[in-house]
Image (cartoon, one colour):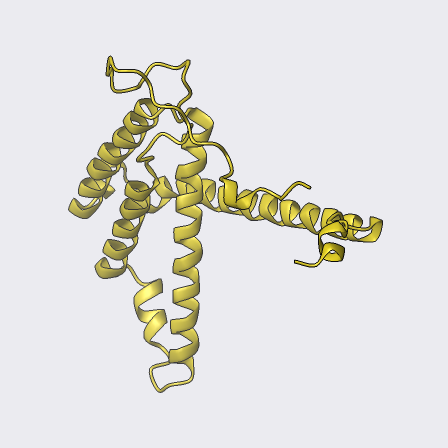
Length: 195
C-alpha cells in the first residue's frame, strides 16, 4: 500500500462536518415528524373507534354481531399487548408507541390503497363503485376494516426484549447459569483503523 494514502487524514473538513451535521439534524427532524404524525393518526383511530361502533346512538341495541366479536377480540389483543409489554419490560410509553404507530401505519396503508383504487376506478367505467361500497354501510367493508385493526393490534405487541443483557443483570428466564455477555455495539469490521 502507498505510504501517502495511509498518511492522509480521514477526518472531514469544516464544511463537510457542517454538511453531515445538518443532514443528520434534518433526518432527525423528519423522523420526529413521521413518528408524531403516525402517533396522531393512531390516536385518531382509537378515538373514533367508539363512534364507528355506536354509530346510531342506540346503545347496546346498536351493536351488531360483527361488532360484538370485534370488541371481544379487541379486548383479548389489548390484554395480550399489555401482557407482552410487561413480560419483555417494554414500559408503558414504548408499548403505547408501538400500538399507536402500528395503527398509524395501517391507516396510512389503507388510505393509499383506497386512493389508488379510487384513481383506477375513476378512469374506468365503474366510477360509482367506491361510493356504493365505501360510503354505504357495507358489511364487507366493515369486516375488512375491523380485521385490519385486529391485525395491527396483533403485530404491535413486542416479541423480544430489546435491551442487551449485561453481566450484572439476572437472566429473565430464571436460569441459574452464568449470564451471557452482551455483544459490543460495533464489531471489529466496522471500527476505523488507527495508525
